[in-house]
Amino acid sequence: MTTLRTALTLSKQTVQNAIPPGTSTLIGAPPFPPKPPNSPLSNFLSQIPTPTTLLTPQYVPTDHLEQTASQIPQNEIRLVPQPTTDPADPLNLPVWRKLAMLGVLSLHPFVVNVTSASMSSALPIYAATPVFGTPPVGFAKLTNLIAVNVLMVGAANIWWVPLANTFGRRPVILGSLLLLVLSSMWAGLATSFESLLVARLFMGIGGAPADAVSPDVVGEIFFVHQRGRAMFWIMQALYTVFLSLGSTVGGVAGGYIVDSMGLAWLHWMNVLLSAITFALCLVFQAETLYDRPQATISMSEDGEKSGFHNKEAAVVVANSAPASYPAYSYMRSLKLISYRPGIAKKFAAPYKVMRLPGVWLVSGWYAGLVGLIVTMSTIGPQLVAAPPYLWGKDVGLINIGGIIGAILGGVYTYFISDFTTQRLATKNIHGFTEPESRLVTALPALFIATAGALVFGFAAQNPSSTGWVGLQFGLGMVSVGLMQAPSVGFNYLIESYSSVAGDCFVAVTFVRSIVSFAWTFFVSDWVKKAGPAEPFGIFGMLMGAFGLATIPMIIWGKRMRIWTAKWVPEGSAM
Picture 1 (cartoon, one colour):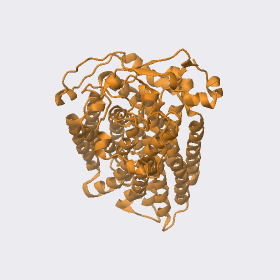
Picture 2 (cartoon, one colour; picture 1 turned 30 degrees about the vertical axis):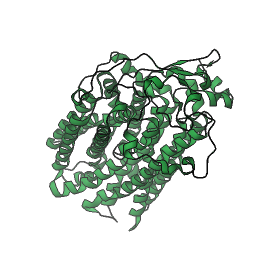
Picture 3 (tube, rainbow, N blue to C red; picture 1 turned 120 degrees about the vertical axis):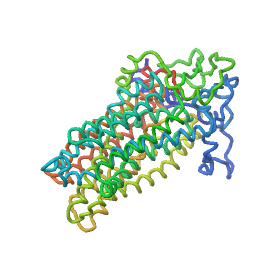
Picture 4 (tube, one colour; picture 1 turned 90 degrees about the horizontal axis):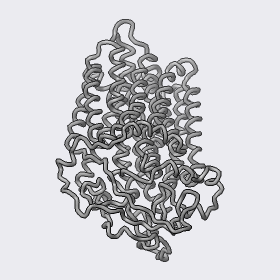
């Protein structure tokens, strides 16, 4: 087994040749042919796949699996993971089904985010009217309606993901959505603050799988070089409860719904959205929990070095697989139970992945970005409801900056993420793709988000007739950074630790929920006592530290994966 000290002292050449978990051959092995002036590599952005080619599983038949690295066609993108000939393999789903699932996977977390964030713009109305008796509930206490929801959206995955790994993705997604529908009905019927608080807690539990199960499903239906683009569509709706479009759209809509239809309809609209999502998932969501036959790696005598493998000595040999598979009908794809034994181990697994450095890096990103979005979405309506702004029912418009930032951050990620991965793979002497290549994409956006926290705090500390512009810019800058968390951060986890990716998501969302809960729980009183500049200055400082931690991971991340390879099973259910 490789120790941390050994991994850090390995020569550069040895590290370059190593293939720890996460390192894959994306481009055919060298020597690469000279690049003519008009070669595809000289104009790589023109090679962006169309939606059809992106989603079509153009896999290599299993009889071609037995080959060495040097036998891979030059400069050819290799499909990772390697699909099978089984029609039930999620990688082999038809294009229409992948598109339908991608749409449902986008709608599901978007709705969850809206149900959580729409409450933020209604808080000033709750604080100004005796809905639950006289005197009205104070604003600081009302923020707990958001805090408990944020806490459970992340923490509940401690239960949901092990259940999804045991019984399948479909029963967990459908069961959680049903809980979201029922708890939203409870919120609409609540007649006391305490009852509404408990309903919001259960809404968080019901919405939690959108935060961890959805990215795992993406890893099960898309190839490595496609995941950044695929995750882009999901992140338009995912992680934006506090993150991007979900929180901002929900925040904008909430105030107008309450003003035109009453407070109760804020919750009944959540019931309607959740019920529609449940019906769509029931019809289109295929079960993607799949036991993929694993290829064995045959090593030469000198191929084993300190617990990792030398790529040139590796020969991929296909495991024995059935000569034929049963037909895979539409109804078979909708099965509700796909039982896998070992539920006790699955519940313990999320705690074990906490020893992986990449988990802590993405946890820091996610916690800081979501914490900022949640606190801004909570405090922002309160600020613009007071003088000199007095926006009234328009307080939700403070989130417009977040929508613009999310779009800009999404466009940036769409064009850069996969391009960076493929470009660096072509420069690698072995044609390897390293997960750390994705981290380079996130650095500029993370520093923009850090600056956004400072801009928001300064503008909030110094209100003026045009001060709302600073609030909008700050929120938009954080949203630009936020879009990197799912597309870059979660893809990094999928590629580095594919066999335990679901457990990594649980750990990350759990850390995120604790940080977001703490920031939201205390921020209202903190702002009241010290003003906005102090808390948001400290939040920005922490976000900057989380962003700077990316640099050593870019430099030494592969060494960390060599060290932690002993804790990552080679097998993958993807």
